[in-house]
Image 1 (spheres, rainbow, N blue to C red):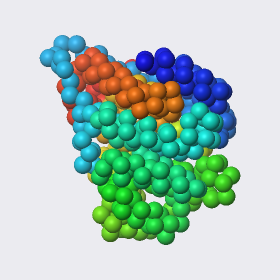
Image 2: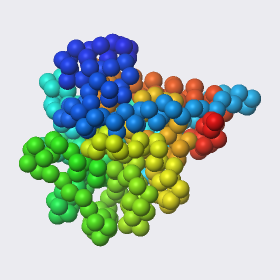
Image 3: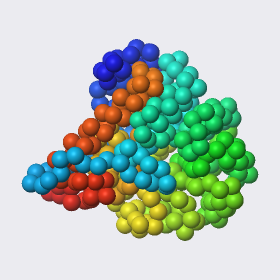
Length: 343
């Protein structure tokens, strides 16, 4: 099995719900939410991909870097490459009958562990979606997944964090960017923004349960500062893949601004438009400590199951190694803005 075969199978199974385009940039599926597309005109989705494509790397070839080290440690996790799989739910909304929710979560969580990374698991209006991920947590062992909880009322967030603690989870996330999800509103259970005080309360409740907490959906430096002040353990710079707000800037564009205000205070992850190991290096050079990837892992899992997830991750690692050699970066810690070409 190779990536082409995986993509061809995923395209066949998706039956048009996802076209599995040669370049996944949101042009064909604009406005298809629910679905794989971006909100409205799809500009936010396209902005993510276009911004990364516009960034150039600066080759440096006189050095002694032959076998760069791609592993890293973040939030107490040892990762083979600085990558986590983004939490994705509603597979039936996104790709129809191509794969059910339980199959998808089993594929990405077990495939991630085999590949030396970790997967986020989703929450949704039906509690069963989150419980599928927690079942995988119990099966795979302590600290092997990161469940993300929607920004429900604080009391419900606490209840779901309690579920996580009982399942042996060590890190939870809250994807604040999901307040704009159409699917939640269609299911009659919208999520809501949180005040700084509510965010601090959520962090305190996580601490009481012995959990670390990641806040996903940070796009403004002020929000990043509030997260740091609240004591969150990490943030994810994300516009939810362009699925919740039209005309939003690319994550690659705001990442350096966020790094400037909270860099060194807490780990920064970023997602949005990352399609290759070269893109991973670009995000790290812009200020991320690690990245998350979403849509491409849907294709990998639908087309190849657990093996597809492993193969795609191994491909990303090989591409990252090549990019590190070509820019003279010996380790993940050595990747900086010096690897980028500023015209």
